[in-house]
Image 1 (cartoon, rainbow, N blue to C red):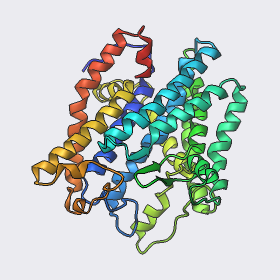
Image 2 (image 1 turned 180 degrees about the vertical axis):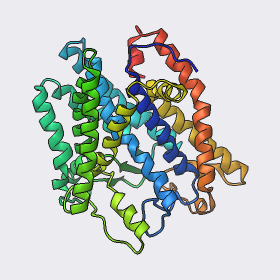
Image 3 (image 1 turned 30 degrees about the horizontal axis):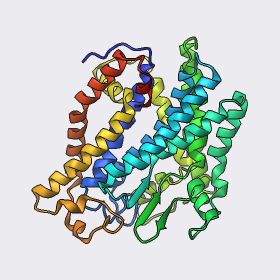
Image 4 (image 1 turned 120 degrees about the vertical axis):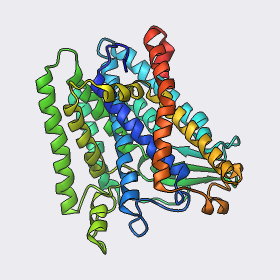
Length: 394
């Protein structure tokens, strides 16, 4: 399994590829698991350890992907002027916002009326890139201070809770409170990714790119990967143990030891708490340390996905949704129930739809291997046409 040569840093692509592959597991679960439409895999009253882990492991994806988006921005600007980097980040941010609203919601719902808009990670990255395009003009120490303040300090805002659909509430929903907005009788807007911590995370990821400059000493980088990785995990366990700050929902003793452990690790994603980010960025740093010089069939497989993340993202959601329609037809259901609209996104008919977790895992593996040749072909095309500026937006 050979991979074309490129100047890209392979360990970063392998990590990105790994989280992209894991991400597909959660999205397959969304469309195939029999309790998805009416349950929550993190609800300790109804979940099982295997179901909880299936959701938990996929929590690595969003924070690592956002963090590495910042790192990629730093490396992109290594030999460019601030003006060039600003233009790229600002225009790419606008492009990602457009893709979220025009394409991503459509392939998630297949609703041509766009009655249901789901604002997710692509939107968060787009806005964060626009913010980063301004932050790059600050000294690195100031960028670090802003990033650290937003990531470590945003949980001080947890007590601010808005309701209703006034302008102040809507602004707050975008910034720090997950919410659902009803626009008239026919349109619904799901705000899944409040922005404040994501902007901080992409800023810290931008500075992280400093460790991957061409002339940076590898051993020093590996030392810092260990320090950052273990520091993040230590901070998680210390603050989670104290149970006073760092997460919107404190953990609590449950009716069994297993559920108590699940409660301890059930950190808040919307918005991503300080503890949530520490819990998943920490292991990502240790993974980068472990694969610094790794080169084998597995790493080659993963970096294919890591080099074409945007293409992969849209392709895998589209494929999973199409496969879900095929599955509902095979088992005698109505394929229109898989068109998720403002009125019927939790149709009563869907209570009888779905499959076991074993089926979810089998479909997940199938999706990855179906997409691999397409992603590899596109990766090769991008490598052969590096001078096509528009490819950097795809």
